[in-house]
Length: 74
Image 1 (cartoon, one colour):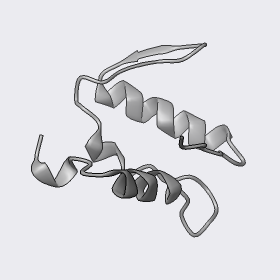
Image 2: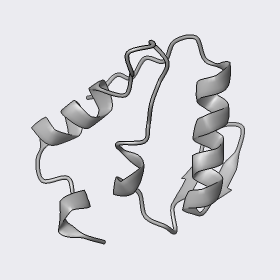
Image 3: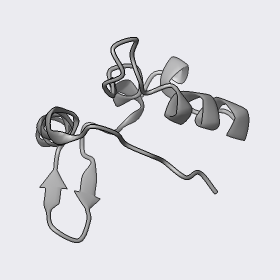
């Protein structure tokens, strides 16, 4: 992983996750995908994803069907 894609502090993390909306109002994850490992293992209550390519496909499906996404960062 290149150093430019390492989250260095909380402020950077919050900025990345709160700026996922493009000007059209639809989520745009393209700027945060490089921060994910090629070997990402993602799991939620309905699916389990292995690998960055499958994760990207999942994100694309999510943005197509979502009118609004809200992230609460704690």
